Every structure is written in C-alpha cells, then in structure tokens.
Image 1 (cartoon, protein in one colour):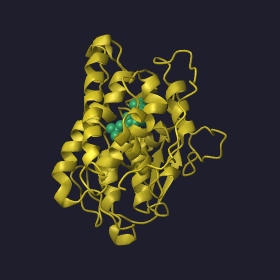
Image 2 (cartoon, helix red, strand yellow):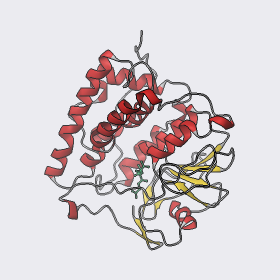
Image 3 (cartoon, protein in one colour):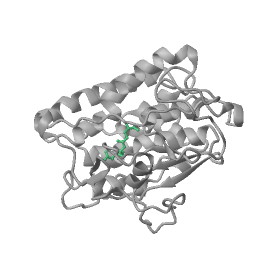
Amino acid sequence: MGLLVDGVWKDQWYDTDKTGGKFERSKSQFRNWITADGSAGPSGTDGFRAEPGRYHLYVAYACPWAHRALIFRALKGLEEMISVSFVNWYMGDHGWSFEDPGDGIPGDDLFGLDYLYQIYLKADPGYTGRVTVPTLWDKARGTVVSNESAEIIRMFNSAFDGVGATPGDYYPEDLREEIDALNDRIYHTVNNGVYKCGFATTQSAYDEAVGPLFETLDWLEDRLSARRYLAGDRVTEADWRLFTTLLRFDPVYHGHFKCDRRRIADYPNLWGYTRELYQWPGIAGTVNMDHTRRHYYISHETVNPHRILSVGPEIDLDAPHGRGG
Ligand SMILES: N[C@@H](CCC(=O)N[C@@H](CS)C(=O)NCC(=O)O)C(=O)O
C-alpha cells in the first residue's frame, strides 16, 4: 500500500503516529459528476455528459466502497453502458495492480497497464494522494471523473435515466433527509468504523471505535425489527451502503479487524436483511468472497503479519431470508 507524491509512487502505509493510533481516511480528490446534460454537479467541473460507452469503472471485488458502485451499475442496468475492470485482490508495494489473478477475471483491458496508479497519472501527471477504488474513468476526455463512491452511486442512480438505464430511484426526494442522516451515522460508525477498529494501532483508538460500531449495529437490529428496509418499505441508497459492510462482517471484519463482540449472524434481523439484499436480482453477481477474504487477510501485513488466511465462518447467504412475510 502506498500513495503518489507529485506523480511519484511511494510505498508507505497509513501513518497513524500523528493521530494517536487512529486511522483517518483521506478525502477523495477527483470530484466531478456525470450529469444528464453535462452540466457541472455539486462539485468539480462540467463536461461529463451521460453517454453510453463513454465511461469505465475500476473496482476491486474486495472493497466495500467499490462494491457500492458495482451494485448501482447492476441495479440501474448500466453493465452495457459502463465497462469495468477489476484489480487483482492483492494490494502490494505498488498498490492495486492488474496482475492476472489466474481466475479469468479481466485486469485493465482498456490500457493494459500494470498498476492503478498509472491511471491516476494519465489524469494528472503530478497527482499527490491515495490511489483508490472505485475510480471512474472518462474515455472521451482521458481523465478521472471521480474516485468517491458516495458520489459515483448518486450519478449512477439518475444520470443515465434518459439514455436507457433501468428505472428506479434509490435516493428519492421525500426520503433524502432520512437517508442522509442514516448514511452519516452508518458511515462513521459502521462502514468506516470497522476500518477504525482494524487499522487502530493503539488500544485506545480501537476502544474508541468498537463501542460505537456495536451501538449502531444494535440500533440497526432494533430498527429492522419494525421496518423492512432502513428508511421504511422502499430499498434505498442507505441500505446498499450498509449492505457492503454487513456482507463482509462475519467473513472478514469479525476476525481480521477484531470486530468480535457479536457476529451479524447473531442478529436475526440484520442477518435476514443481509441475505435479502444479497438475493436481490443482480446482486450476487457483484460478490466475490474469495477475492474479498484474500485481499484483507493477505494484503494487510501490519494487521496479519504471517498472512495466514483463516478458514472463515460457514455461512449460507442463499438461505431463505424470512423478511417481509
Ligand atoms: N472515500 C473513498 C474510499 C475508497 C477506498 O479507500 N478504497 C480502498 C479499498 S477498500 C482503497 O482503494 N485503498 C487504497 C489506499 O488507501 O491506498 C470512496 O468511498 O470511494
């Protein structure tokens, strides 16, 4: 793992010394928006019109943030309009690579490059910052549109509706306030909360993260006893954002990131809800648990120095979910 500094790759792990052992996620830097007419979105510049065949998505199956983008691409039927490349599950000294993982999953079939950071350099030869997935590339302008998943899923949700996307609005006007509030709590304590536990390098930083993580999970368990989905009877963006963390919880975060007060399988509502979302049309095809478990256990040398891949729990995501009956 590393980052680019003035266009040069530096192999260095997150520096938690400056933050008292706490993991602090950097802000994404490419913040343009694809819009229906090419006008500027809430940030960035204009000129990124929704056009079939124009954009390319770089993702890792392992990554919960990239998984959101893959999910929205599937929900909105954008597979033919937005092409995709997968990085290798192993994130090594050069960051994400396109080395062939040997399982038939294509690497960078757009440029044939070796590393994801080379895509960032194409967009900005002097780039300084982290090189992350998801990354959304514009083939027409030869630049990165965005590397912020929260914004990529909003673009996918609506920008392509006029050019043949599958109908469906996961961020409806009347629920926006509620979705934003849910996202805010879930991002800080759950989506990023598991990373704060796993990447903490002091006991106090871990303690500070693990309490709120399970408080929120307990709160969500209770909420889902009376509601089918987080914001009521419609599935929304908030559900999909939570889902990518819940899916990885028992197979990865519980052991590897020490999030082990309870498993998701110990929460009847959260576990049924996770299975329901997994069984949603098109979603199982966005999941690759083999890449996911290998990525975390084998890439994170500071967390798991001997790189032993644990056996993992026996779970059945296809079991009847029992929700909504
Ligand atoms: N805020 C970003 C975070 C993306 C992110 O951190 N992705 C991880 C993989 S799970 C990554 O690529 N990390 C590489 C690094 O930080 O160097 C988003 O949501 O898109």
